[in-house]
Length: 263
Image 1: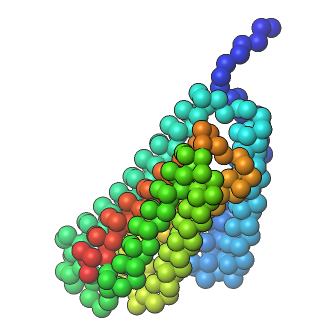
Image 2 (image 1 turned 45 degrees about the vertical axis):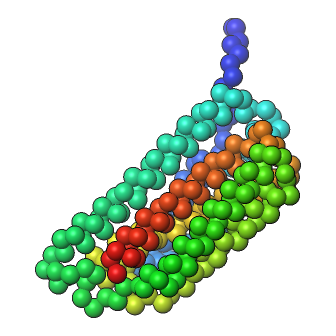
Image 3 (image 1 turned 180 degrees about the vertical axis):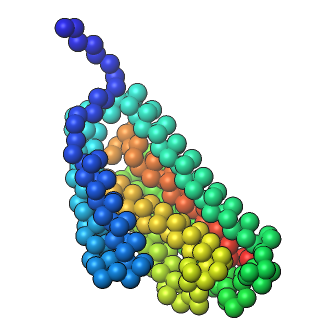
């Protein structure tokens, strides 16, 4: 039997995809149980989150080994990785397109059940010039620091790359903290009319993306500290930057539409 050589990576059998499926399933079941006030809902959520975290760490370890130590990331493989990530970002665009569509549908023609006004009668919307404006400034600042880190990476300045990433991660954590504070001070919930549902759908989905982007950047800085990036090979860092840019753009739309325009 002849053996054909090619530049593509044939992935070896791995237990992590199926384990991740069960972990995410447990996590989602826990969240649904907690929202319905079931007794073990919070416990199942924590167990599911723990399993997801452990599985991600193990899976990422294998991916990093394939990339840095086994030499499987050829130029053809990197092209495929970039294309797949672009498709992922496009799918994220359509996720937010759907929730913004729901928001505009409810706000441009509010029906009689909500008093023909939007936000609904009895709901006090957030002041866009307080915490939302502060979060906007934080995210714009994080974009500046991330641009600094990228330019330092391309020029081979390791110290400035680390400093820029640390600042960006810190600003992302501060944003998530203020978002949590905003949720705790909200005078309405996700069950309060269509405004509450669409508001928490838009901001909640986007908040999850900030956490994912922050974890993406944390992974990048850990790999950078381990000397796994060079100025010529840092594809995962570039993809983390792309995802953070997407998160920034979504927030700008969200601030203008959900906070400012609907206030």
